[in-house]
Image 1 (cartoon, rainbow, N blue to C red):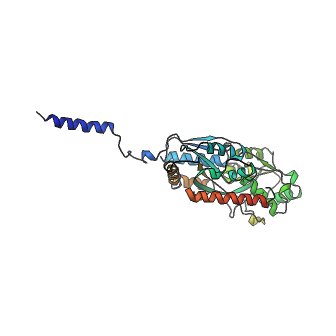
Image 2 (cartoon, rainbow, N blue to C red; image 1 turned 180 degrees about the horizontal axis):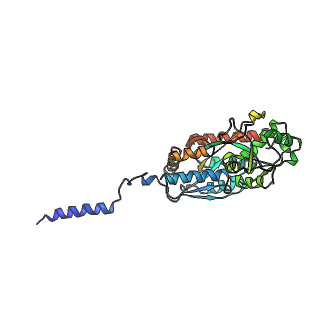
Image 3 (cartoon, rainbow, N blue to C red; image 1 turned 90 degrees about the horizontal axis):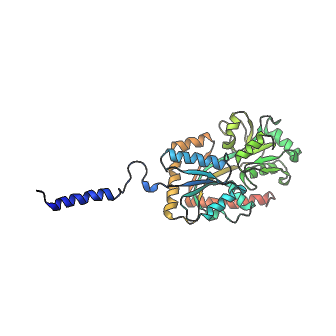
Length: 328
């Protein structure tokens, strides 16, 4: 007959195995690195740059097992400052992040928003890209010089549309272009749309003479022949887009946009680090690298404090440009 103490020891060990969870999860990332219930807010309408960036990033995050099911939702309004206000109001919420970019920087200024990006927790800058000047397939303008000559001659007859509010990239790019060709920015008829999706529909419908937006937002329509690309605003031509830069067209403008992720204020160090780690791992995936290539996005990865310093410098830059253009 076995010693009763031995049986008790075996039974106690078995109970420990059943009741105490393992310290390390099996396979994949550690369970503690996942953010259950994570939601990513897009502060403009579906189809815009923030929306495309957020949904592309979240798909890659899920496909690569970096996080479980992650919701993307849209909360448009006031050039992104409605969403910004919501984010800032969610103090300490480590399960919420927001896709944003240069447009929100400008909107904070031009809309006198009570919330600013200085109130958020910087997570990561993801991409940078040039804007593109496009017209509908039925437009009489076949190249950028024809468009700019007609625009300068009669700016009131050629409204320009952009997927951001005043102060955003799609506003700053045509205003800087106007100044470079000797057209007073105050004479420009700029029509603001809440995201690239609404803008593209208006260009195709002839509601504006031309549009300025991110390349990723117009690429499908350009490839389908519905839009004609006339010029890109960055320093170099873009692969797959048959359009010159403004600089090589004799217009002294070199302008790029960027996009990133911020979170509510007051996050715990653990919650902040989980978000930064997740987006850092995203940056290293082949799927994300392919997304950069397909969307003509330049890799502009920064995280944490480095991204925070960049946000502060961009706020100063946008205010300075708006004042220089006489728009502030």
